[in-house]
Length: 442
Ligand code: GAP
Image (cartoon, rainbow, N blue to C red):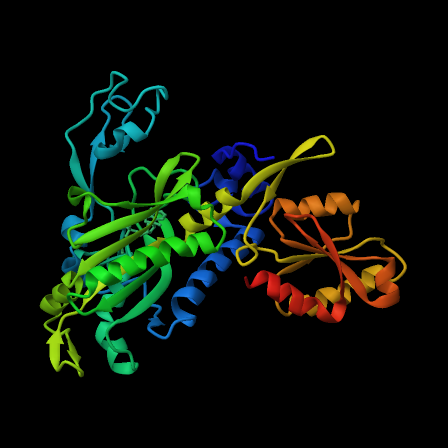
């Protein structure tokens, strides 16, 4: 049985089972900032690791980088963020709240939630452009010359290191540079749990190609990135690719399409795939005075590569995996939540459960636990009935349960239970690691 997924159900489960907590909760919380708890941190790590493995480790044409969050302020002049990374903002003269002028229809009026801002009798000011970059000061003096920005995207760290990577690795165009890291945007209207926050993590890859080959590579990355989510278990019918209309394109993009997911609050962007042309490299060449170009040994041509950029959000993807996995079924007359994560994404892979708390079963279970701990995040649980213990694990999406019982003590076999089919199979302990690896690494 599958009940309707609502954000309320997902947020409640996330808090109850230690996926996420509101930041600084004991002080009343900090709006739209979230902390990941013991289960959530494993989930998000798995999302990032799956991305890194599929985008970097499994490929020979992409390398990784990890840049500082603080960069030279000229970077943001060159990239266009100082002049153009803005949202139009309006104030309501009645309630004194601020809203994005282009998204008034998406938010409720704080005083009359059945209406949108401006429809409640409150007068809105003229729209002003508001820059979304967070500013801070480098060093002890708070003066204009010391202003630095918290990066609003990880991409620029990649562009300014293009020559460093090219000169220190054996990569040839076409090749990519990938980065996972924090970005910051002073969003006017953050919200929807992890979907839009002011501090978030991005998973971005800039793929450098020969001009003229860009359309082909753009299509290639659209397919790759769409299939990445499907291969990790997201329901295909809740995903779609939405090409941007020409008037929606960012100033640097020749083409862009979003991978969208159908969240409980509607279809929304998970990831953007853009053809950024040679805009960024040319801007940084102009602003830094360095020759940022590529010499192609085969054709003996020099050119500034075009860039295809798949840019995903780690928190947004984590939310999509959580929402998509959410399911409900009936057990002993109660409705209970089950998270049907793909085994690669599941925060805890295996639960080890002794049937009885005696006859040497707990000791045997801990031996099995020690073997599996070397490979995966595993949990031991001996409290309560076996059915209740399975339910606790289903609720955090643990795909496999191992029971140590009377027979284990005689022949060193255990039962292996699959969360979704609920089928149990008897397996010798010596074959467990191979069998679990086969099932997890699919
Ligand atoms: N370098 C291109 C770039 O940053 P973007 O579409 O602005 O493009 C890429 O961001 C991805 O980063 C988005 O698809 C989304 O997953 C994530 N993201 C952007 N802003 C976010 C926010 N305020 N909160 C959470 N995730 C965000």
